[in-house]
Image (cartoon, rainbow over all chains, first blue to last red; front, side, top):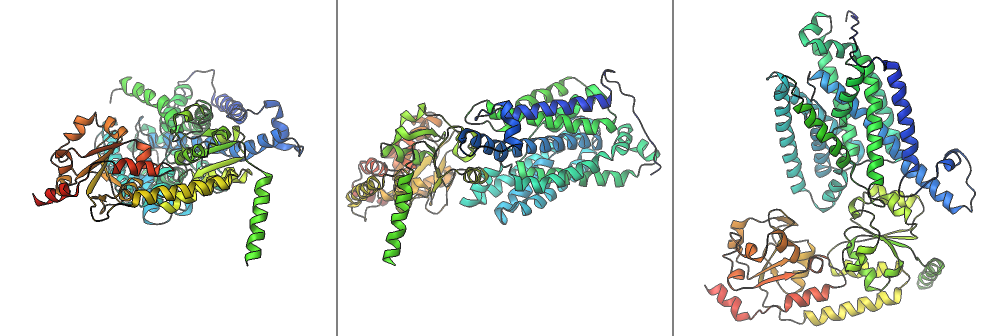
Length: 345
Length: 283
């Protein structure tokens, strides 16, 4: 690598320098976190929050004990999980869009999510349902579908080839998932129904303790790829001429994405559209320079999923909506808008 | 040994008496029905969305569907007891309720008489209504015994057909419908398949069911009785030609709850002269 530094001029609003944008997003995330921690079926007053989080609770104060257990055991792990998952989904969206050189690439659309789901479902039906088996199986599933999507999508120029490949891959994966479901026995079916929800409800401290270092470490690694991603924007040949080992870069990005998406799918069951909507919104403001786009998209994704989870929790109290419904309700129309905007293919 | 058991039992009942639950959340319609059967509905503070019988459940706060209920929703109702089907989940949510110090009683959802009795005992025990529980089970046994006094030789073939808005499905073995229908003295023509599977309309004619059993919601989902009877494959069965079509309320046929004797009685009320089945075979 010749270390060619490539900085793209930002066409965005000059009000938002990258640093300011990242700081603003971090602030929004903090506000959303407080909002999400204090709102829900159990109402917790904001002013009680510091004492609940850090202070001692009088043993006879039953109300406060309920608040504290809800806050520490239910809401906090779930909010942190939403931040983590949202950030990773948006990040992989950016990586996919750069790698596929395609504005509509997104982990779910190109089959990465359904491949991971297929791997996980296969393990549930053929073997045991422990998360330590689910995660690697989901990774392998994601990896295979990503490689397929990449090679199939390249056969046609423009958006159509990749989307059609994604449609076919998704169809194949979902039919195989259907086949596994058909073969599953009663207890396996039960595991499957719980797993397939696309939900953050599984967020518990032991899962987070395992998933957080993994996803954060890989995300930080991904942030270092900004130069290569910028070069890819110009075109693969141009990137090669700039001195980027394009084949190795491509391979590394595909494995990195599968390592991120697979375990996440194994834990959440797949949440759509965050990886599509958030990178586009961030790009509108900040431009396409991956140096700032990657961290800003991560923060934006975290904000988006945290807000979506908050909506899902408070919309039909004391029940809750599946979070996939909320993200798709917002993401679906946005996807249509991108299609109709009529970018020349 | 006996003394030890007695001591344990006394301790248990002492502990139980100390905390008679007054705020109960139920996850699973079958268990809600049992709570109502004990006339303990005034203790219910929340139920899940599958609790639709009796109609009065509509006015109780819902905490979501029992397979994906909301932990916080349950907690916000401040229950001192949670009665959950073993199908309730996700498992993390049940574990979370327990780790927050809530008393969660999980009961089997299996469609066997044994499991039904355990369900009734379980609910009764949790609600401090052990005597009522014993009475209810004794009553259930007596009713079932009465209904079982039928000649076992005449076991007409029956097909159990469902639809939940899609293609019609048939109930195979190890389903609540199969158990109910067999208790009523029918032979399930789909005993070779396990669970609910889409029906092969071609296969139905082959199976020659003498009775067609379905539910009110399935008939509605398929677009009315005429549509059901006109389904290809179904139309040519002995059941439809002789007009032996039974329609039961969904929860009655599928619930496998305290109303089981009623379901069996409704199924047995259908005319079934032995001659008819023999002439059917002779053709």
